[in-house]
Length: 109
Image (cartoon, rainbow, N blue to C red):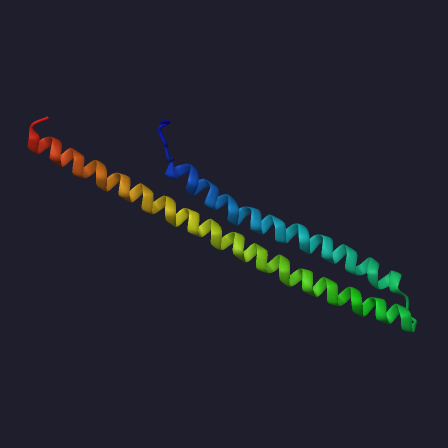
């Protein structure tokens, strides 16, 4: 059986990375959304069909914007959960080491 090693510091770093990735994702989306919105407004035209196309585009962008914001929020929360898990694991390791050190001292080792 292979030995399982868990490095809480790596998990903590990964959790921090989730939050950073979420911010980067939102930044990229917002930049893309802004550039496309301007082009879409010009491309739709001012007639009735253009107005309908513009409304459809706006509805799609709004729905996707909500999705991206929700995704970024979930990624940030997942990162925080991973960081909490890493901290709890680190604390459990330290508590176990303290207890084994105490027991070794009592046994004269």
